[in-house]
Image 1: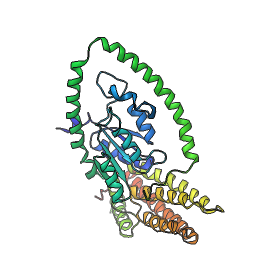
Image 2: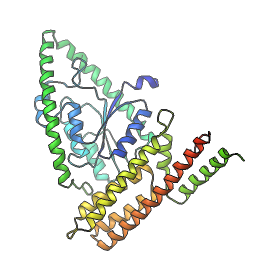
Image 3: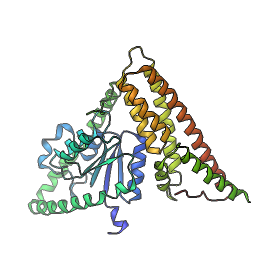
Image 4: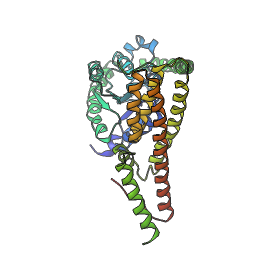
Length: 208
Length: 152
């Protein structure tokens, strides 16, 4: 596959440090991936269209589908481990416990080489664990994971399309609208939550 | 020797000295590799973010260590962040100082922490001045119509 074709891969990068966001964004763009960066786990979930309250409801409604344009397709999530509020590990668990998101590969980055932490992430379904600072040689390991997800997804879509009828399209549109509204209210809610996490000191993710 | 080649030689020697004296490590080279025609200011941009972040963290640390009841978890969290950002741009001596600093946090050793904060400040100011001098040299080379030598 040529370089141009790689730009179809979209990576969501999550890091609370602006320096590291800038760095990972550049690393991924150099590798011709499309990149979205966010500074927290909750913003990542928001971007993915998953909210904590929605988890149960989402089970029969895949959020990553070419027919529903409410979500941008994400082919891989790369997240820092140690973040205030929701840690990278929490984010990983939420993604892996969501029926609509669980197939998205997740890569965890951490500045500390703690074997128990690495194992815990891998057991929870992380595809890779990168030690920070992340390098180009690390980023080169991402593509195989995304390729694998693409294959899975294509299978999934084929099954889906068989069962879908035209009548359902309207239904989907209305769902889309209500989701849009929900999203907006969540965003507003988030601002207050953000402020709270700034006041209370962020979890100590050193010896866990 | 013309101005450009003189400046270029000066640049190469200065950069080499920064690595030799441990101010910078290989991560800085990684940053330079990520800079290209489409992102000509990448290194300066990231390093400027590092300067802003460092100054904020050093202020926070100063405040945190002046409390009556010191919250060592909070101090450690700041140092953790400082260690992360310095290692991301390859400011090796700052990063090394943060490692020592965190050990004193573990021990809740106030004297050790205060000394480390001062040393971390000093190392930060040193590397900031060195990097600013390096960027200055780059600008001079560009203004003289030359191109910045690749160190990688």
